[in-house]
Image (cartoon, rainbow, N blue to C red; front, side):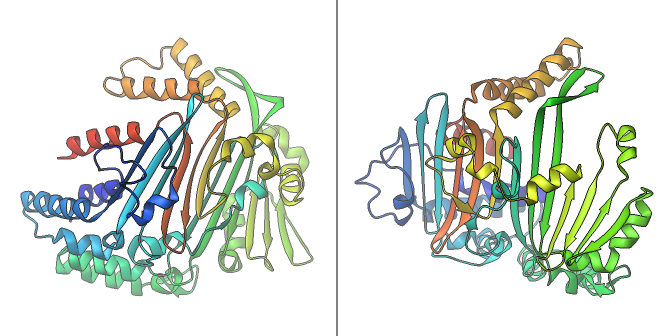
Length: 403
């Protein structure tokens, strides 16, 4: 099956019409209870008609490409066939919108839903990083069922027998550095990736386009410390950097000598492996790592973050937060690039870029998108300068281009 059809599948939640439903009309739609039916824009419907229409579209488009694909069967394998209803709302808040969308699937753990981790818990990334952090991301990725899911997708998509055999062979091949097969590795991968960037207004770094607030970076990988035992020292050796190793209290730390920071724009990277917690930390400096692991004055407790998250789910499996300061930085970079003639000759991309710039200008509180698995479905929320209605219109335009 061609990639473009698979790419279309996540749009199922956005490919609906934009008619507004009142609270009475949505009373029999389970997903409706998870959104704000008093908001400026609301919609709540059974997903049957949409799923049927989408399945037919996949089957027809595949047929046009000379392929035999059962669209309904593919949606079922991906778990999307378990969505019984959906609802969405957009509440105006100044120049921003609080968007809520819920896909009711009775807690299905099939297909792509199984890859998103289990029931959403308190977000870890905002609690991991210091207050003032400007770009924060978190994502749960459970690949323990991915092998079987890929196998089912290939089967229902009528992938060539040779491709299916190649896949089975690849899963059986051993990864020399790890001493295990690809299949064995995937069966162990239940990971959470946490990342944060903090712009330090007290320190700047020079660039060819001027000075910018110096970014400090910290990442924490949960659930894969076992990989470091197998290949960590080899990676350090291959890096060519003079990392110094220290072991204390079950924590192994690799750090760059402080005197080398001047050669690395003031950075002195640190890698710290906490075996007891099954975590790997990577930071741009020992100081920022200490601030992140200290557990005090975290972003989660800051007024900026709380204001951005107000009215949105506080637990989840994935999130991306951007502060107003980071949005302003992007606008600054765009302005400098434009002054230097770097925005010329973009063609059709210029309109999209200009649209993104206007959206950044409207950010007042901050921007965030979250994804949360619950007992009865999947909750997707955001604070954005676009409403769900605007997003639906864009999704419809994208669908037309894909046809």
